[in-house]
Amino acid sequence: MIEFNYEVDFRIEDTTKFSDWITRVVMSEGKVVGDISYVFCSDEYLLDLNQKYLSHDTYTDIITFDYCQGNTVSGDIFISIDRVEDNSKTFQVPFHEEVLRVCAHGVLHLAGYKDKTEGDARLMRQKEEEKIRMFHVEQ
Image (cartoon, rainbow, N blue to C red; front, side):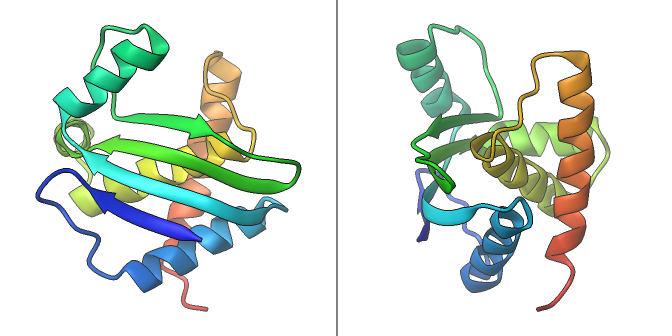
């Protein structure tokens, strides 16, 4: 089950379309959808989580907590809408596309992709682009 939670004044417009897309993303990686919770929040909310659970004192756009078991993808994905908005301006992409990128990024982490090395980061970006294109394909 895919859930959307909001700690800021932001809403996914069509949660059914979004859930269907996330399901297709997970299945395209040969995985099964478990319980995935998206929490859209502020910079300060995410900074607090980053400090408390990861001992990082930096702003970030996304933190993913992995609860996967076997082939089933489950986890909590926290996304800072403040960072998404700034990133969309920095990278000159539409806000909606940046939302898709970070949502795909979190699921890709749950599917086993990493982004700490240059090679892993490059593969992650390729996968993000592939998954964003899937959003625009009606099933």
